[in-house]
Image (cartoon, rainbow, N blue to C red; front, side, top):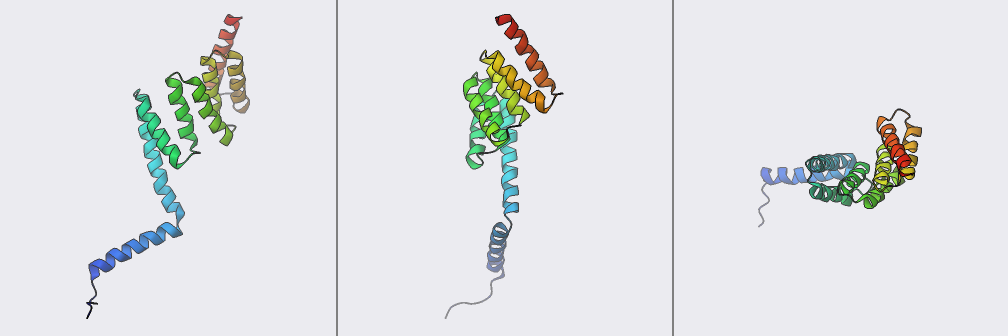
Length: 158
């Protein structure tokens, strides 16, 4: 004869598992918010690494985020910044382009692409990218400053 005696501890565990699974299935928003919190924590850690000059660690975290969410605009943009900080401007431009494929009016990516082009010595192209920023936001002080520096260097090189 089998023991069919009610066991409250096992019942609560099974009930909890069932409820969490049901919530996960019924409400993707809850699961997404947990993923968002994890992404946010990874982004914060990567940002801290980048600011501390630990660029390789930051790049690993950006890659981890992008493995889960390949269209994470901030991770794409900051990966470009991290690469640019290592002097890999051509590769950085590729990451800014990925941002711009998703959002062609992303001011950070537009400006960062201009900075990368400037650092490669492509002053005229850089100015075109700063102009795109200024067309969207005429008061963008970074784009104004960067454009003026690029114009100065363009005039010096002629």
